[in-house]
Length: 55
Image (cartoon, rainbow, N blue to C red; front, side, top):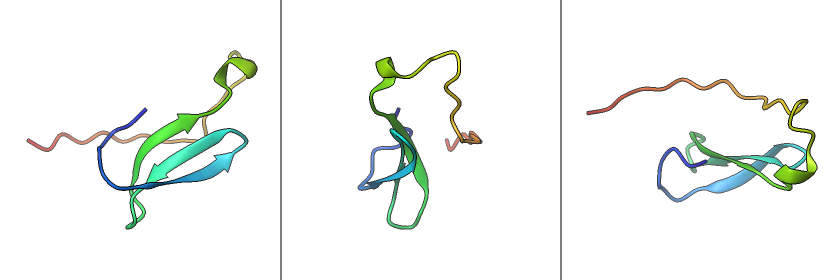
């Protein structure tokens, strides 16, 4: 899931769960690898999301 299209790198925050971060540290996306191999009923993302509309 990508929130913003900008140059970024991936940082693993848990097994197979990555945050997509800009060079200044903003989280602009989330990637889950091997999603079909995880128990979806028990999968919890260690994320808090705050949305902001910028017209």
